[in-house]
Length: 381
Image: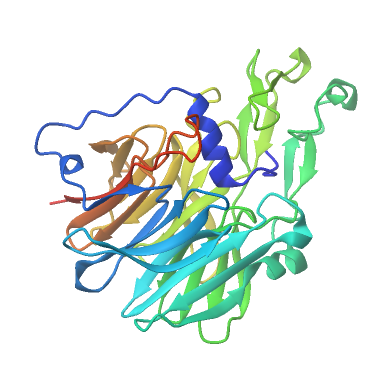
């Protein structure tokens, strides 16, 4: 689906689907004693110095304020960086340097896109490493990739479709830098608008495309209703497309380095985030030297974040599955690590897993929506 709607707005729209609260799993659950709470849309986190946690979140208002904050071991929250009207995301730390992403205009006018990879030091000094939206305008990494229906579906059949979702198209100019991973002098950026993984030289700011994720096709069932706007309106597909594949865009949501040297990338399915077309989220493995991309695990409902342990096991936040999954590096078998309502981000430091849960506020309530997002930690031994 053409992402004219930014990823955060898409997640907010999903609140029209009832979310069943996850079971806390007993009185000893890490959900009972969060490190921090009262956060709005805490969609990324990283572990900093002295076991502090860096988290990106939003303070709702006119305009909303994107923030990068530090949660100390005593639970106190200190704002490190903020920018009104912008999305702040993709926090990652190396030593005393904190890398993060900020963007605006995702899903809108390509000329209005702005997106940056930045770094902040312990003195609070911010520097811009790379401008990512201009790279998208100049290169459009998925510009030759085809989405929508194939040639087997006739133009006559598609004549009655609304403008959105589009029926056949190639990758548009869009950028929403969303997650980052750092290795030495290289920063890998997962861009949910480009559908690509970028490679950025942290010293020079040079940007290149490492990999473009492949489309995520789905067979169209009879009676499928597709959203056509953010107001809850939908369109019932005609019989002539039933049984045919629609190639949805992949939407990378996180990127992490595994102990095997490969990148692990979580991906939303680019279409309905509920189960109307099945749980179509996936994890890809990407070679950081060649960009070779392989589908590793699929059939995950809304994977918005992942972390890789020192043993190679992968932990995935299934936002609308209301759980954090553990996927064995050896067998690929999955199990529930923790039941939690709308988890968004996961990170591992040593034998401790950190996560954000209750990440989506109640957007159906009178504005501003109440922020109930939490940061938790759990032992993975």
